[in-house]
Length: 248
Image (cartoon, rainbow, N blue to C red; front, side):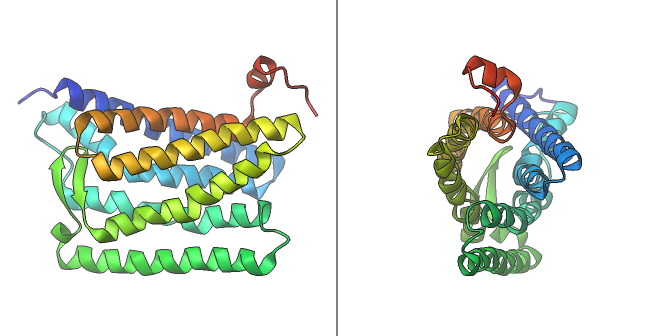
């Protein structure tokens, strides 16, 4: 058995940390929903949890290499499925959050945004499953434990994250930054950094994810992004104390 290489260990460990942090963030937001009965908290928690599923395959590959050696990866069909299929719910959940918080007074635009997200996602998921069931190798070419050269259908699915999650998130957080309420303003700053960093990390991974050092850098970014999402949506007391923000 060939021991796992230092680089594969580092990437896998940080990816696993990101997945665990995302799960904890989701659980925390769901707990807040149960306390405050605000469904946006539930949707946000579930959105980030489902978003992280695109990296579950990498975390499971890390586990496999730890147990069985550097050359034993998660099987390609399972890896490809995890990359795309489980992120579907975020396109049902996040548009609801964005629609209610930003487009609530523009019902026609809100409904158009929500239904366009749902429709385009379902169409692409159906196409993906057709490709996958016909020949899973048409989805991509695995060239490393944590990387692949993806086909257009996977890139199209991942692009939906930018269109219906990241860009609306930037607009939403930018609006919050302009608020005169210091708490909302600071939340907006944290979220704007998180969404912008997520966009940059996603572009780096799609374009240069086959380069190990880029892969490592993006996984580190995802950990920091998750932490900033936590700060942005909750703004804990210690953050208010650091920035001397009084409770409104």
